[in-house]
Image (cartoon, rainbow, N blue to C red; front, side, top):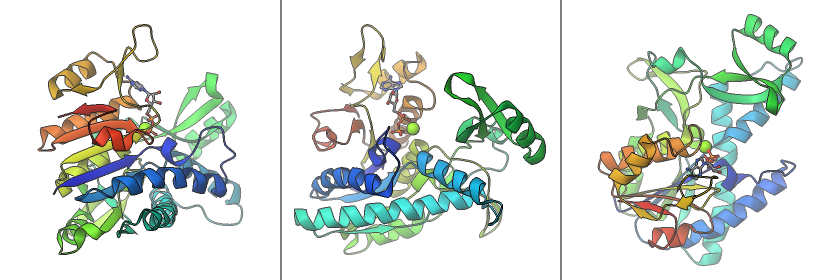
Length: 316
Ligand code: ADP
Ligand code: MG
C-alpha cells in the first residue's frame, strides 16, 4: 500500500523532566499532532504506532501502591491499558489537529495483540528494565517471592525488574486493519495500532492466545506492522534528528541519505546502542529486506521534511 507507518517514541509523547501530569501529555501530543496532521495531507495510508515505557511504569507503580486494596493486574493487561490511554490521547489531539488543518481523515485506536513464540530464547534471559528502582532488600524479597529477575544499576538508584523482550512474529489484528485500509474509503482512517509493541501473547490453540509477562520492542513491532500492511515507508520518530556514527563522541556525524548496505555496516560496527538506536536500525533493515521501500529516522519537527527527503536519516 502506498503510505507510511509512523512510530512515535516515548519522547514524542512525554517530555523528560516534567511532572508527568495528563495536561503535560496533552500539550506534548498537541505539538506532535500538528506535525502528523501536516503529514496526513499526503495521499496514501497513514498508520501510527507508539511506545509506552513511561506509561507502563506509572501503571506498575499505581498497582504496587494500591495492592493492599485492589488486586494487581498482570503486565499484559497494563500494556493493553496503555494502548487505550495513549490511543485516546492521539485520537483526541490528532482529530482536532486534522480538523484545524482541513484534512478529512479520522483516527481510530485498535487494541493490538502481538504474537510471540513461547520458546523464544528471550524468555530464559530477561533483558528489558521496567518499573521503578528497588533497594537491595526489596530486590531480594521480589526475587524470592515473585520469581522476578532484577538487575543492579547503582548509578541510577538501585535494583530494577527485568522482563523478557521476545521477537514479535505476528500482529493478530493486522488482517482487520488491512481490510479497513484496503476498503473503498480506507485511506480516510488513521489507525493507531500496536502501542507499546502490542500486547504480548502466546498461541495455545487455534484462536486461543494467552498474555505473557513480557515487553515487545516497539521499533521491531512497528516494522512488523509496516510489513503486514505492506506500506512503502516506515518512519521512526524519536528525540534525535536521525542516526549518527560516533554518536556523542568526537567526529560525530549524522547520517542523511544512506543505502541499506552502508547502514548494515555501521550497525555491525556497533555504532547504534542496544536498547535505543540499535532496535530502530534493526527494525528498518528488516523492513527493507522484506520488501519495504523507504526507512526514515527523525524527530517530530523534522518529520515532514524527512518524508520529502530533506532531513533525517533516510534509507532505501
Ligand atoms: P524512543 O523512545 O524514541 O525509542 P530511545 O531513547 O529508545 O527513544 O532512542 C533514541 C536515543 O538513541 C537517542 O536519544 C540517543 O541518545 C540514542 N542513540 C544511541 N545511539 C545513537 C546513534 N548512533 N545515533 C543517534 N542516537 C543514538
Ligand atoms: Mg526506545
